[in-house]
Image (cartoon, rainbow, N blue to C red; front, side, top):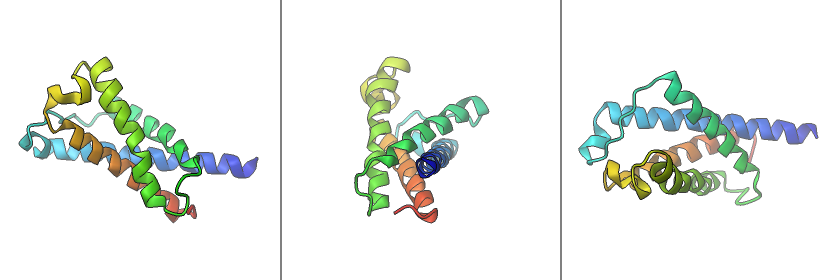
Length: 136
């Protein structure tokens, strides 16, 4: 039981760190006009109200690392798991919660590409954290 709790907490922490790095990538690329230069209107302000839920949801998604898929290829597993939050963002959050159209296209036609990239940052960060902490 102790090993289970330790692993769950490690996965949550990895996902939370991934959520932080994902958020910083979104913020920095918006701050420096990278997203806008591609016609994508994603440039959030860095605030606790914006950052906190992203880190917590990153942690919750991190628990998916418990799935016994590609356990020996943690970086590929991180990229594969990043498709979960990507699909939720594109097909639930943007159209139903943010009212930005399916796949967020109201924010720009390349929005899905940026969401995929930002969530890949989440998956790779979490996977690297796990690898550094003995998870293979």
